Image 1 (cartoon, one colour):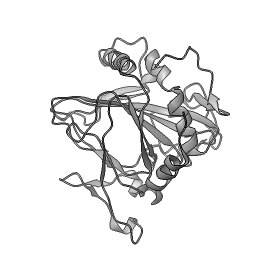
Image 2 (cartoon, one colour):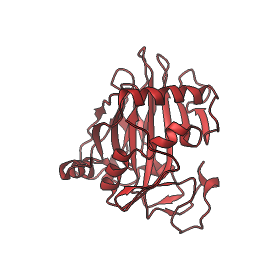
Image 3 (cartoon, helix red, strand yellow):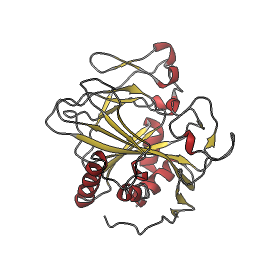
Image 4 (cartoon, one colour):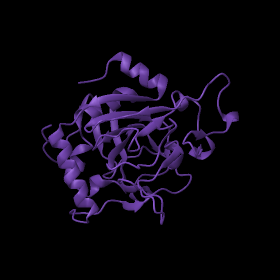
Length: 276
């Protein structure tokens, strides 16, 4: 396990890294079954939220925040050793905590878009912007069913107007050229990820995903990991703020922000690790 120096360098230069397979097909099947249970309201507890990101639109992107609170198998997932070790390397830290997780499911035929954006500006209660997300496909995500697209190097350009980047009709980013460094060109790269594979991206990397018009769903889980020095610095509200128990300026810790990696090893979770 663990990333090579070349992989770490690629991530730091491009702002994302397709890592590859971390979960067996059987493990993916278990998570899919448990996701269906959460969607059906059959989980033992409730997540922080479950909604259509597009409101009353005919297009649908189902978002579940902190499915790990609702389901034990997704609770196990946030401690996945290969993912946690890789994230620690990418962030250059010996302590990793979970900020929150997020399911985004685009159903067949009417799955909606996720417009171009950056993550960190939507998280206005934490600093600094050093988080890394582990985006894992629970079914093959490709161009046909609405995989993610990234703009290389964009994590180096700072926040773009509060994180919102325009989205053109052809699903290219409608960015403000004055906010892009001189000499940079905007590349748009599709990031196809097979079921059980994970891709990492920096919290300032420009990304988005077009609608799903295929006959296949596109379920995925992103776990947003933060380095151990992340502070609670409230500016505007956030869905997770009611779970914060520390004072402004303090390191963000607590039961809803579990430590998953510490001093080179998985932090002891409250259960046995699943087999892959």
